[in-house]
Image (spheres, rainbow, N blue to C red):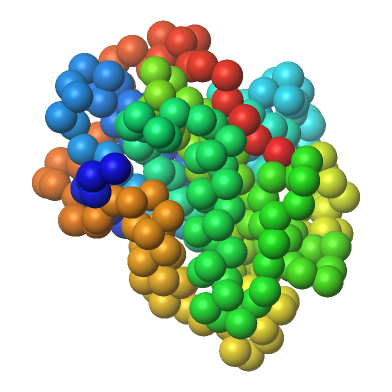
Amino acid sequence: MAVAFYEIDDQGITDYNQSYYTQLDVVHQKKRSDYYPDRLILVEHPQVYTFGRKSRGVIPWDLKNAYAIERGGEATYHNLGQLVSYPILTLREGEKDAHLHLRRLEETLIQVLKEFEIICERRPGATGVWVVGKTKKIASIGIAISSWITFHGAALNINNDLSGFLKIDPCGFNATVMTSMKEELKERCPSIADVKKVFITHFSKQFNRLPQEASAGAKISRPMNSEKLIRDTEKPIME
């Protein structure tokens, strides 16, 4: 398969709502044009909870900043110090398999963590990335696919405060399973900037795509037909 290109949109610290509608806009634009480039959004979100389709829209009343969204899976938590990645890719021939997409995301994160001497693995029936030898989950993954265009993605805990997970059962598990690079490495924990660089390298390898800077005007707010886009989303997968 020929190597394709993708744009990197590093949003720094950005509210979840803004990044979410940017994703929907890119999906919308890609549906309109086969030439619209793939994109990888990298971002940190201020504290926010998201609930996937397995949650059936049931959000605890005491969560102030929470969204029910169209990705698969249950609840998860984002906050500063966590690297969130949203690959918005048009899947090509040989790639049109949601499970393959999930496995590639997992393998990207496993290889990233290996670079920092945290040995991790995937576990059957528990999508995400787990620390070998421990019942500890360090990264969560949840995707949606519409017309073979992927969105949503992965969240890697780097040096974030994990206490926010205590208000939910993250991905259906007890909150105590969650860990971070800081918890595993202590003072050797890398910066988010360093992790981003390594993530881009391994993402490019796993997805057979070469990175380039996002074009001007890449960060677009709410698309005109966001509600229709959500209704038309094909079956997503998240564990």
